[in-house]
Length: 236
Image (cartoon, rainbow, N blue to C red):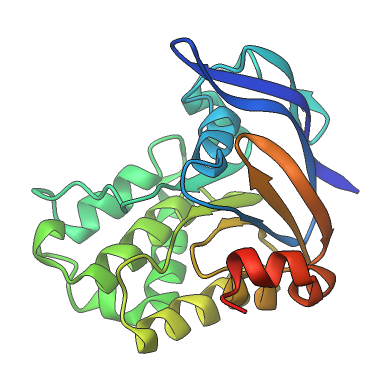
């Protein structure tokens, strides 16, 4: 069953058309990868879903509900978490404060405390740094914090934008292992990732964006085997 559906979505930055008739869907329980070159429209797609950018036309539905007139905070309340490109942690605030901000839409302090415990179990390194300012963390720790902050809203759909960017190979493996665990625990994932091979190895299905359009869609295994995809994005 489709949890998220985009139909013929256009989006603009001023007069620049960043998305052109983008249609895609994410089923409950899947990991879906969006791959493509820089500037292909991947981040813009997530921004449109999150309400940070209003589409010019088309529809975006989540759990059957139209999101186009929802504010970003209302979209979070409906069950979409977003860990943006570049991590975007609040550098002068502590790790604990960053995580607490992720639960700002939640009303139950007891539920938030349980979710905080769950995030710290997933990312034990953050437990050791709860009182530390987020800006002093390493790149890998900041990425863990960005994902943990998104999880604090208890999302049904977690959107991740370039979670491995700038990380060492060992940390990349760690982050991808955690994404798999988050999905196995019941959270649907929409993933943008520069490491297309790694993303497709983890994903159920994938979409290839080119110049703001969906150029290909298929199962992740078929995209991995595609000569066109291999030549353009997998370094083959």
